[in-house]
Length: 336
Length: 294
Image (tube, chains in turn red, orange):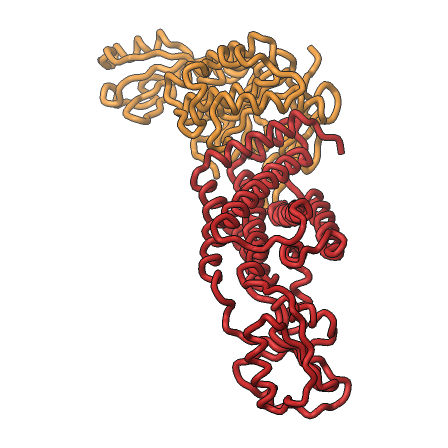
């Protein structure tokens, strides 16, 4: 579809001016994410929460349960992929991996939790288990949390900054006035997307730099890769908000729908806690959320130093979701 | 005169409501056409179909003989009955925004001059008075130097001075040769500005002609107005129709001199006498009834 640059830029710059001059919106979009990141940064900058996670390799046949597995205050998670679980022990995402059939266990040499669990295991029927060790660096909770919080802020900014604004424009007649000009729906929507995209990337970059200077967090991957993933994730979230805003003309309904989408994503996409151990159906549901893939990819880049190829599956899902959401949103868009 | 806009049997039905039911007329170049009607008559729906904002249930609107399309968008200027503008944007920036949406636009200075916007160019559009806002909305409608301008109740809510100032602007536009389609429920406004008027009621046009021809076709009388207390008689006393409202007596007569002579014979004080010709308002009330219809 042809796009007239002048018309696109006219809408793009006007939307930017509107946003930057609205001090309350500006404060919300910059201060809120900064406060969330800093708040959690200070709250979790010390030791990680005192929660032990032990992965147990699933058995094909019946294996007598160890007394160890009845220990309270330890969360036992069934796993089938031993190698993936070992990696998680390496990164301190799991405190121990137990394979009862092979009578083996893995702990991280540098993990205090691993040391404690090993002592408990020996005292509760696992004294003759073979010890395997890994020695990867520790991933603090804040390091693990930051990609999720940044992604979550991007989600809120995209959903409410585009969807809500378009619904407001529709309700108060701004869209009707623009419809009476040669401006096409595609030009209008593109300008909205780009205006919010650059805003999200700007605020996220500012919050990232500021938070890193104050609390410091791990970044082992490429900044360019992270930027590309954040860009793709933002476009995907904006596309989702365009879908919501395509026809709705009630701000109350739009608010409800946006909350209906954003709250499950916030809790089930792995922002605050790992999806490990959740019901398999919940884990499957989480894969439907773009936020899950954005967090997976950005967390892998930041914590594990992954490259784009390593997170290709999440990127492909985000690209597909973006295309589908944009297509449906543009097709169903109504000025009034 | 070739029609710039041709409207053929336009119909718009909403569930349970026939908003517009078979409207047809033509609008020529350089003509100011007034669409009058009580609230709920279907004026705004009709105009929004002409503007391409609302899709008709049936019928068609042709601009220069063709269905509404990109050319119409480029050459039409529209001032809606109510329009919100983007927040935190000044008058100057709003004009700049809309100028950039069109392939051809009037010079900014000319727009500012025409619509007298110079005094508040840097003001946030949320802080404009009613008259200033209407002038800005008119400027937006003119930003593309349109061939046809739609003005939907442009002076509603304005004080008399602002309304007269606005009429002056509309006259200037008409003098530039632009076609104007004006909807209003101010009869004086229609009489002052329009070359042709159509009166709508219940989704249909019930009268269409020049204001003068409509009045000539319906009336050959004048109205004598007196304070209500000065004349307590009835129609038989003066051999004319007598109406009483708002503390006034109105005597509708085709022989003014004879009626005045009769009033003198009845010793009616004439200090408060006012004689006026019939107006579009009289015709409007007669054709549509006085009550407002939702």
